[in-house]
Image (tube, rainbow over all chains, first blue to last red; front, side, top):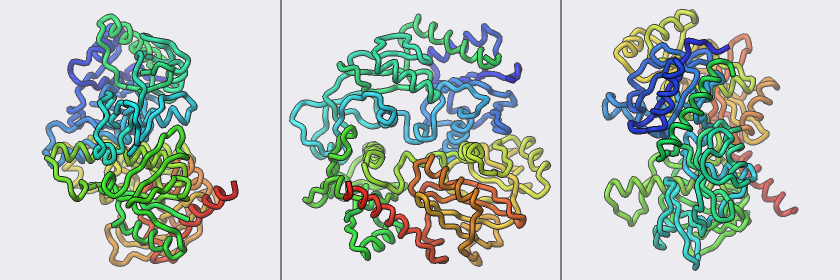
Length: 256
Length: 310
């Protein structure tokens, strides 16, 4: 049974309008909320014990995690201590987001958490799940047709690099380009196309605990990229998604 | 028959595995991370991984000609030897190249010890301890906190004593909790794992697929890894239940080789502390004669025989 005194933790960079919308909705529902920037986390009182996360003594049963796991968490610590401190907080967060008592948006497994939330991680997982993905060539590929380059650490396509860079960076090249992006919350497509591959991806992501994502598909409806930290530009969409996420937290806190 | 050594060929485990392989007439192709694009390169489509090719020194090696890869990635890989870049660009290159190495290793269609995606839970001790407990291991009671009062109260509930250690996968020495540490907590620090101290001895179990190698370590220190003066290593037996749990957990974490750390009480209770996906098995093999490296090679060779038979 979820304790009524438990609250929701929201970790976001300043200016994240979706996080602000969720926070406002939770406040309206009378739910205790702590909204903080990631770099302040290491300065807070943290406790993980008997299956519950406590932040400043408040039991946390839901977390909206809107930053990358490799964010800086250690503002206020000495420069020489920050890398260690960041790693420590990162490891506590992974454990916390995977607690049974916690509804996390998003929940990641250790592979995604430490390998990075970029497209290569999701691509490998989607291939294993049998979901169609765009065709890529990796490394020192000798290709004559024009291709675009997806750096492993970036969601954005770039012009293909020269020969030496391509070899040295083991570059990922594809002919595919994004046709449209779909925003999914839970298993539902909130904005964009509802192609079978996108719905299958949304369902698979939700089964892993990834409830919020932007999915890009190519012209053949194969999945090109997955972004689990989408920024939403439209005010109305932010409010809609913010309301949906707040309702998910409300239901979780009240045993739904 | 051919294997590859990937990452840092100067690593002692890589050197040893190469020597073992060459004694068995297994060809070793060295693929150093800092030489990618200079001395070697790869080409593959991950939707057709069997068609991949590794090029090294003007020779092309189809993926299908390899039966295994042994991996040791350097924590701070360098730039290619003939390349000089401003610090920021050098850092960007190293990061992007590491991603490429990970994708390459994760996609290889033959056994890899270990793939970068496997055993990642070791990066978070509290998360891994939760997974171990869910899998059926007995894990000593623990708390993670930077709150002095909570840690002191937890310690009070453990009259046999408590130890503390880092939360992350960064190597750190395990120490007994004392007043000095509580004072440091009071001054403000990041959270630590504080755990019930288990009186007894250490056991390291190496799992290579379905084989296990157990070593009992008799030490007078709290953390034998850092107090090596009078440590004694002995091959030891393992209860069947622990044997099964280790093999199942390693498989669930996609680990070809894994190193499990246990504390065992004099009453024969086995407490699992953690699982290491990059275990340094040499000290255990050298002191007990357990053929852990050979088991890894045997596994690779057996996969080559399967491929030949198909």
